[in-house]
Image (tube, rainbow, N blue to C red; front, side):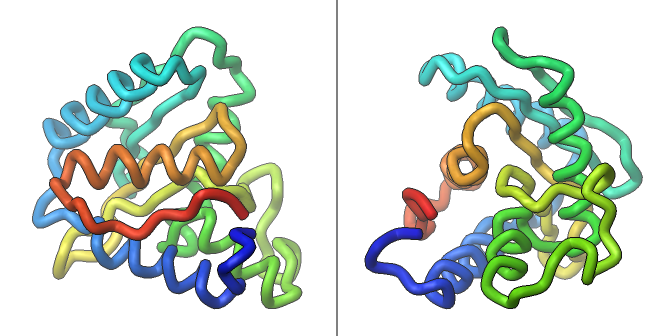
Amino acid sequence: MDNEKTAEEVLNVLKMQEEILQFTHFTNDDAWELGKLMVSEAKKRELAVAVMIKKSSGLPVFMHMMDGTTPDNIDWLNRKFNTVLRMEVSTLEFYMYLKNSGHTMEDKFLDEKVYACAGGGFPIRVEDAGVVGAICVSGLNHVQDHDFIIRCLSRYLHMDEVPRLKKL
C-alpha cells in the first residue's frame, strides 16, 4: 500500500475514481474509440496487455491482445468481468474490501475459477443508469492493470483531476 495511505484512504480513492469516471452514455462506438485509445497507449508504453470491454449482457464490444499475451490473459479478463458485474465496483476495490474486512471469496460465495480478486476490472457506469458493462485489462501486476484503465479512461473522458494510486 502507498506508505502514506491507510486502507481507508485507498478505498476512498477507488470510490472517487468510480464516481468521477462515469459516462453520460455508452455505445459500441464508444467502446471502439476507448479500446483504440487503450491499445494506442499500450503500444506507446510497450505493454503486453490484453484489453476487453464487455457490456453487462456479456456481449464483447472490444478486445485486443497485444503481442506477448497468452490464453491465461483471456481467463483473467473474463474473471475480472464477472467480478465487476457481480459486485458493481472495480476489482481493485473488491480486492481491498476483502483484504481489509478479513472476508474471503468463499465468504461471498464466489468461485475463484469464475471470479477474480485482483485489480484490472472497472465498471462502465452510465449516469442515472448504473453499471452497463466493464473494462478489463490483464498483463501487468493487478495494481498496474487498474492504473492503466484509470489513466486511459481519464484521458478518454477528459477528466484531468482523477486521483490515482501508485502501488498497494
